[in-house]
Length: 321
Image 1 (cartoon, rainbow, N blue to C red):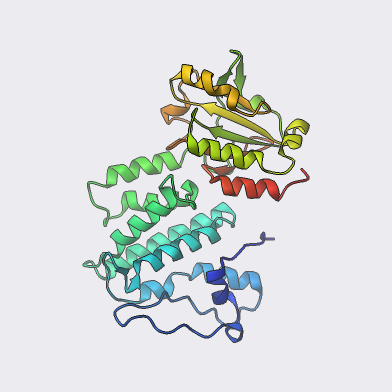
Image 2: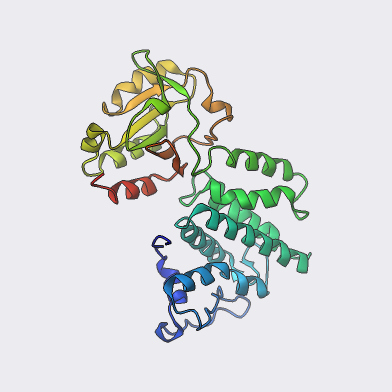
């Protein structure tokens, strides 16, 4: 049975039967069109079936339409609205099993390609390339997701519509996104703590482990520390072995790390990467600091380079574990 999917409010009306919808908004300016949601056939009455059909056909009316395709609009839909729909679609996919989500991303990319092929003078491929890459791969995106980006960037690396000068970059991104995917066992490595003791990630015994790549004095890292420390009962969960934080510095200024290390919570396992293995991009793709990986008891990856909000939500939903 599929897990419950939380639907962004802006998409909820599209999933409701037609009789339950609110009145349509006033039409957009003549040169643009509103983003067109697919109309779910009345034969689908089960909520799960309606959701599946909706996600499978989410982009159909958009790509079937036409209109300006430039910096102001994509196929006649205002650029900012297309961005909003990409973000909402990603949030829906993130709550599905990864194979289902990746299958839909592959279909999404194929729709972009087919629409470009239907009008080779169009800029739809270039526009969607920029939006999807920014939302799914930019380290600062709140919905970034390398595992969801992987099917799209695989397409970009091979597509005849990709610019030749951009193709090597997409091939590199494809290889990096394929490292340590969600569902795989997190690559093991050793780290050295402040007392010089050698530790290994896989030797940490806990119901769940947060692998936190951080830098000393990093403002964004401090915000993550504060957010985690604010989770009710977090210290008790760490004490009982239900949760562990492995906080690793992967750069080379060990003097700065040693000077800052006492500022980290004492219940955390803090250390540095003495072999430079992590920053070599051979086992993890740490594109920016901070970076969070949430692991289960068997060190399988539950979340990869996750925003702290997703990690905190996960912890709060499992307060009794």
